[in-house]
Image (cartoon, rainbow, N blue to C red; front, side):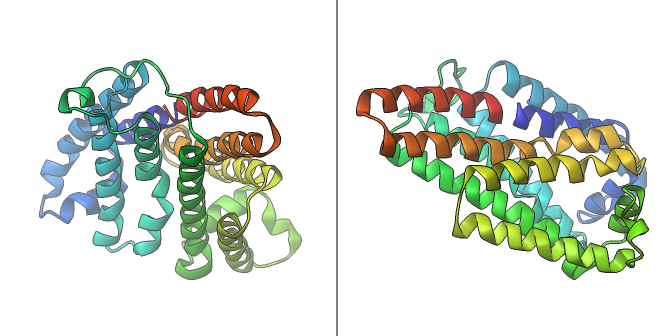
Amino acid sequence: MAVFMEFLGHGACGVNTKASWLPYFHVFGISDAWAWPLMRVVGTMDIALGVAVLLAPRRALLLYMAIWGCFTALLRPLAGEGGWEFIERAYNYGVPFTLLLLYGFGPRLGGWFVPLKVVPSLSEERARTLLWGMRLIVALMLIGHGGFGAVMAKRNLLGFYGAAGLGVFNIPLETIRSGIGFFEIGLGVAVLVTIGRSLLAFIFAWKLATECLYLVAGAQLACWEVIERGGSYAAPLAALCLLQAVRAWGNSPVSSTRGASRHCAGSVGAECR
């Protein structure tokens, strides 16, 4: 579901010819006259990919989506928007790649193109590996987003925080922007240092609330912006599910643990798709 949301939201922005995409086409020397219609082509392809992974995920499709997500994230620093943008977009490429790791790479080439109908059960070692992958994704997206306020001082954040009513505290919004930025960087570091259900639940709620500021501020294509960030909500939830399975191995007999691992595998697979 998260990968579907990412590509649906991103594709909708392209179909609606989002003006902020123009610099990404300029990276390749594409003029505005060509960029506007190409946006609709890219957007339509993204939506089709999102629907395809929701209805019948395939390994090749997930790998392509991870590479495409990484490529589009790289366009941001290449267009002069700064490296923090690439770091923050870790969920764009990290979530589809982690979903691919959940299913496994497959023994034969043909296995990359068949629909993945059954989510495999997890071993303890594999669950721990996936958990670390999700922790890294969550940490990077928080640190990257924190860099927007603490280092880059992005102006659009002032509009978001002002629309949220934070100006009533008689503290300059610039100070609030920096403070929230450093707080998010601290959250990202905390995810790498320690892990807990309360921390992951808070991060999920925090990301959902802060991304919904697009709606509060009345930003262009706000609804699609919120949908596009589905991976940033799903990553902490998937990490929470994996954490539950890993802890079950330590607290339960082998038989009950296997049941917990199968339940977690299904939950993580549904969440990421």
